[in-house]
Image (tube, rainbow, N blue to C red; front, side):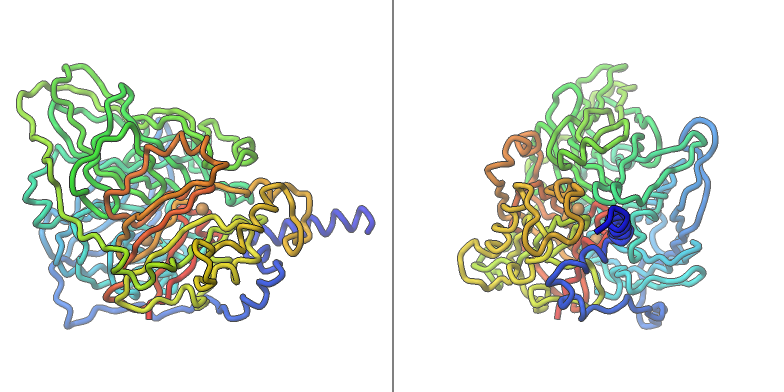
Length: 570
Ligand code: C2O
Ligand code: CU
Ligand code: CU
C-alpha cells in the first residue's frame, strides 16, 4: 500500500471511529451481533391520565437562559425552571442565582404529575435518577420529545428518603445538555427520616459539585472531540450549586450537607482540609443504618453523599474547606498525560468553604441509629452462584458494556431479567470488545469464570498486543494503550442495589490504595465507581415494573458514546 493510501485509510478510520459505533461495528464477531438492533423509536408523548389524582403537580420547562456565573459577561446556559400547579408550596425550592433547576421536595407515597415542556431547539427527555418508577415514566431516550412538545409523567414516590437527581437523557446528547446546565436535585422525605429531626431549613445545605470550562467571554466550552469522549470532559472551574468560589456562612453547630456529584466526568475525593474525618449519614439510596466516619469519600458522577458537618466548638471567624484530595489511577497513564486542563484529574483543589460567622451554644446531636435497611441475602437472589455480568470493554476507541454499544431493542439473553426477581450481578473490566459475547454468558460453568474468556484477551492486550481479531485496521495508533483501563461510575436505573464485595487485580493495588478508604458499602446505591482492575458484586432487585431499564456509565461522555445498555425486565 502506498503512503498515500495508508494515510488515507488511517484518516478515514479515525473519522469513522469518532462515530464510536462504527468503530465497534468494525470488530469481527460484532457484525452479526448488531444485526438485531434497531433505531430509537419515536413515541407519541404521554398525556395526563384523568384517573390519576396527583398530590403534587408541576410544570417543568427546559429552555436557554443566561446567568452571571463569573465576573463580567453572563453565561449562556440551558436551564430547568418549574411552576407548581398543586401540592405543598415547599415542593419547589429555588437555588438563588443558579442555573440548576429548583430542588424538588417530595414525600414517599405522594402521587406526582410532571408536565415537561421542551423549550430547547432539540429533542430532550428527563430522567429521575434514583427513582423507582415504571419504565415508561423513567425518561428512557425512546420517550424524547421534540421542541415545543409536552411530555406528562405520572408516578408514585416509592423510594425511601434520599437525594435523587433529575437530568436529561436523550439519545447521544445527554452529556451536552447536562453540561450546559440541565440538572436538579430531588429530595425525598419519609416518616423514618422525619422522626430523626435531622438539621433542616437553613441547616440543610445542598452541595451540587460540577466542573466547567469557560472561554475568555465567560461562555461554556464543550468539546466532543475523540480524546474528550474517551476520557470524559473536564472543566478547570469548580462550581457548587452553579456558583463559582462557593462559600457558605455557618453557625457553630451541626449541619446536614446534601452532596451530589453533578459533573460530567470528574471524580472527587472529598475531605475536610484540617483532617477532620467526614461523618457520612447517607449515600445514593438514602440514610445508612448508622453514621460512618471516613478520612475521605470518593464521589463519582451521579453519586450522592449525605454528610453530617458539625461546626460545634469552632470559633467565629474560623473556616473549614472541603477539598478534593489527590489520587491516581482513574485515567490511563496516557490519558492523564494527554489531559491538558489546568485542573488535572486526581489533583488536590478546594471545592467550597464553610465560614463560621456565628457562635451558638446549642446543636442537634448525631443520632447513633439512622435507619433500617432491608438487606437482601445472597439466597434471596435468583442466581446466587452465577452472577449476571456487566462487562466493561475498553476497546479500541470505543468503550462498551457487555460487548456491545448501546442500541435500542438489543437485549442479549444476559440482559433479559424476569420481573420481581433479585439478581446477583458482577461489574468487571472485560477489556477489548470483540469476545465478550461468548465470554459474558453467565452459564459457562467454571466458578468465577464468567469472564475467563476475556481474561485471556485482557492479558494479551495489557501487554500491548493487539493480536487476533482485535486489530481493527488501526494498528499502532496508541488508542488501545490509551483505553487500557480507567474508572467508570456504573449506574443502574430502577431500584437501588447493595454492594456485596469488591476485589482488585493484584497489578492495580498501588493506585487503588489512593482511593480504597473512600468507598461506602453500608448503604443502598444506584451508581458505583468501578476502578481499573476492580470487580464489584452487587445485589439488585427488579421488582414491580416490566420494560426497558437502562444501565450505563455515568461518565456522560461515555454514556453518549454508547457505554450503555438496556435491561429488558419481562
Ligand atoms: Cu443519571 Cu441514566 O442516568
Ligand atoms: Cu438513572
Ligand atoms: Cu465510563
